[in-house]
Length: 115
Length: 109
Image (cartoon, rainbow over all chains, first blue to last red; front, side, top):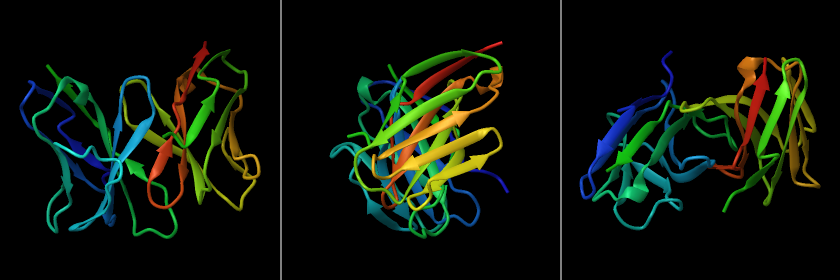
C-alpha cells in the first residue's frame, strides 16, 4: 500500500508563473489536507478537501491560491502568479473517512522555490 | 495562530539520555498528535493521544496529556543519534491539525 504521493518533489518557478502541486492520497483515503511550512516553522493548515468538495479553506490565502480534489485523479494545489513569499514546502496529508479526527498521513512534500 | 507551542525550541543531549519535549495548546482538542521531521523531509506520525487519555506508550516514546492545563509532553527514553530531528505537536479540533513551531532535538553520539 503506497503512502501519500506528492509530485513534483522540487519545483522552481519565476515570479509571475503558475505552480501546480499534485497529491495522491493513500488508497482508501477520501480526505485530503494541504499544509504549508516556511523554513524553521511548523506546518500551517491551508485547506481540507473531500472528493469534489472543499470542506474547509480557512487557511488559504484569499487570492492566487486554489485547490481541488476531482472525482478522478490527484488533488491539485494551484498557485497563480507566484511571488517570492510563496517559497515554502507544501505538504499534503490524507486520512480515511473521519471519525472525530484521525491520524493524518503525510506525503514527502513539494519544495517550491520562486526566483 | 498556532495551536501548539513547543518547549524547548532546541534541545541537545548525549546518546543514551532521555529527551523531554513539552507542548501547550490554546483551544479544546479531540486529540493531540506528535510528529517527527528529519531535515528536509516529510512528517512521520509518532503517536496520537485522545482527549480522554492521560498517558500513552509506544516503544521508547511516552506521551502525557493534561487537558486541564492544555499541555502535553513527549519523552524519548534512551535516545539515539538517529532520533535527531524536529518534533512537532499538533492539536486536532475537528479535521485540521494545528501545529506548534517544533522542538529541534540533537542527539550527540
